[in-house]
Image 1 (spheres, one colour):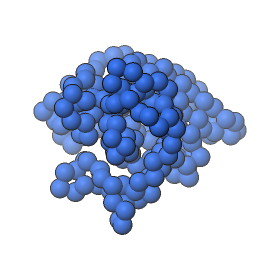
Image 2 (cartoon, helix red, strand yellow):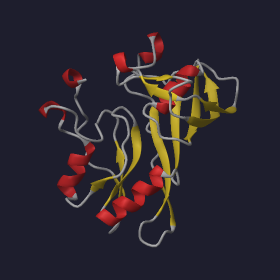
Image 3 (cartoon, one colour):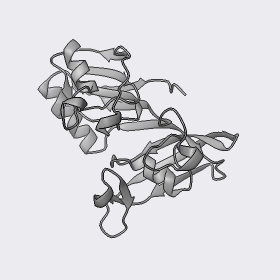
Image 4 (cartoon, one colour):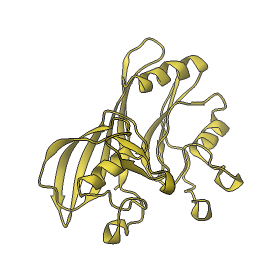
Amino acid sequence: MSSDYNPPTDPLEILHEDDSLLVVNKPSGLLSVPGKGEQLSDCLLARVQIAFPMALLVHRLDRDTSGVMVFAMSPHAQRHLGLQFERRHTKKTYVARVWGEMTQKTGTVDLPLIVDWPNRPLQMVDHENGKPALTDFRVMRTGKGESRVRLYPHTGRSHQLRVHMKELGHPILGDPFYATGEARDYPRLMLHSETLQLRHPNGGRGERFTAKAPF
């Protein structure tokens, strides 16, 4: 990954800012946190902390996934938000373009995942040793050999949506890990974190943040 890391230089797109929360729209191609080595030091966390030195990490998105990402603006907010993610009290919606025209319009993928050690960071389905992974899907439209879907993960496993769609026979377009042939030949991974619902760390009111998919 290090040799071809050429992150975008878009300015930060702030979706929301207050004393507890900072919500940004992460671009595709930018690491959420630093990788190993100086060449992978540029990441969303570093860029955010230049403008907001108090910002703290809460969760992350894959390098190639774009969309809504929240940072905490205090240790209290970080603990509060971290527990919400850990206890699955947050709700996330993703938009994806996938290979093939899906005939099943709604459904659930329930396939446990584990890291594929010889090929890490790839993940794979493992019914004996994998951790539970659950994704609901709803097809928005189909045509021209592809489908546009909304994905609703109930768990937050690494590469969960990417592996689950591949296992359905509909890999996400532009996925460098799980798509092959023509499905891989796209300028980016066609996966975007569209909405994030959570409780505000200061007072507990429900919040919903949205970033429209750029594809």
